[in-house]
Length: 132
Image 1: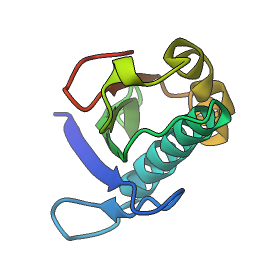
Image 2: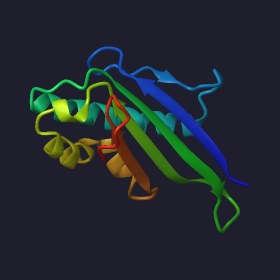
Image 3: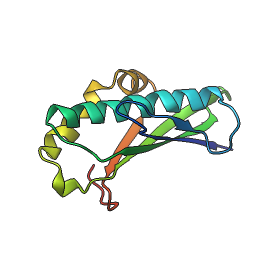
């Protein structure tokens, strides 16, 4: 039976993204993995926005993974889903297509993890409109 683990990080100041584990316990190793991926992707998005002089108005990111048994009956992280939301409306951000097209490439952590674990990344704006 698979298990789902989630964390949420919220931008506090510039590149500071404190983590909320939800249940107040832990962190477990899966929490640490999710935190590393979520933080790196959020910081990479922020960096990409700043390259074009844009402000997201704050970033909140939730990362979730599915833990299940592999063919050898060992528990493994099977997939990671990351959803990034910023406060501004997407239409108010200049060069958004360029930002969304490049920010994942700047993320050392997710690009490294992705070699072994699929990572799906989505981005929504302040109105909940799906941008990526």
